[in-house]
Image 1 (cartoon, rainbow, N blue to C red):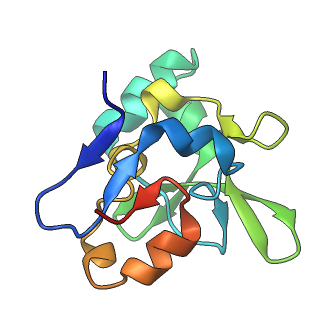
Image 2 (image 1 turned 180 degrees about the vertical axis):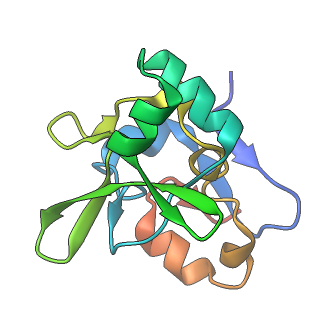
Length: 127
């Protein structure tokens, strides 16, 4: 079974077998938004055995009409997703992660910013 993922319109591939070699660079870095849909909020709150209200208060921030997962500071000016296990260097809710995380590195932004994604992710490779 191949772990190489190619997406039409992108000038790189993603080699999932290299994920364990980078210490979670896709989940750690400068502060930003980790968008999560209402459907994903429901799924993740059920997975964590929390009500949607409880989950939202504990794990989310509201930005306009949208929701983002809270971040935690792991070093000076270095942040991680609230669900990133810093000791294990992996997502603690991987199977229920939002679509923003599931679609990385195939974001529209990286079509014109390839150098940035190559620096950020060891699993992104030229083809």
